[in-house]
Image (cartoon, rainbow, N blue to C red):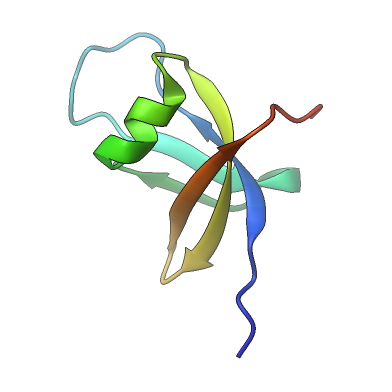
Length: 74
């Protein structure tokens, strides 16, 4: 069984302080777009920024977000 790891862009809303606000997560070309709550590890890796790129795997309608990678030109 192969695991398909992709690079995804994670964006959090800029204009809210609502801790329940969902992040937008998607692969290149806006494929498999998902709105989801981020775990504490991902939030920490975002370092207070509004967007970042991560390795991730898509499963059951959500992205399983892994390690942060360099920003992508897209």
